[in-house]
Image 1 (cartoon, one colour):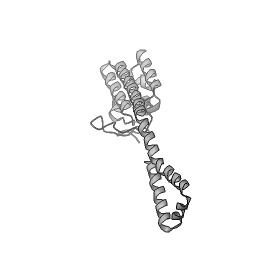
Image 2: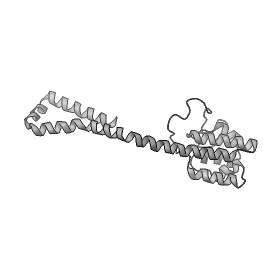
Image 3: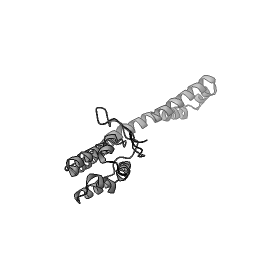
Image 4: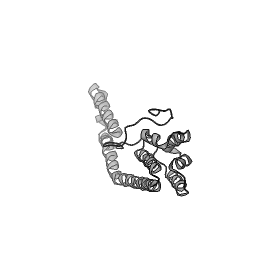
Length: 184
């Protein structure tokens, strides 16, 4: 991975923001709330956005901070950033804009922090609301095996069916379908 016109590891060329971006879960870790607190503190203390990034640059911000530390202008890094987390990319671009205009860096960090909190809350709500469905799926996937065991317990003579080739094929197919249901 690298930049289009540089060689900072961890950054990869990416198309900028646009429709359909950020719809999949990032492969890398999302922006750490502690990094946002450190970034906000550095900006509140009067540091320029590039200097604040180098002070708070860990997690997904690390490659950006490294590139700025090595002397690349924040605006150049922001034009080519692709950390794997859409919020982090947007924050870096907003900080580059704030550095160019001289204002708005604290607002960008605050907005990113609010978005991270809202995303975490949405994830918790989604997990809470889908737990019943996941439990129902597990119950329905396991029910055929339980019912088969009950039927065998009621009539042990029916096990003779599974000694014939058709019975073996049927049993293997049932086990494969049950395993597929558990995985799915």
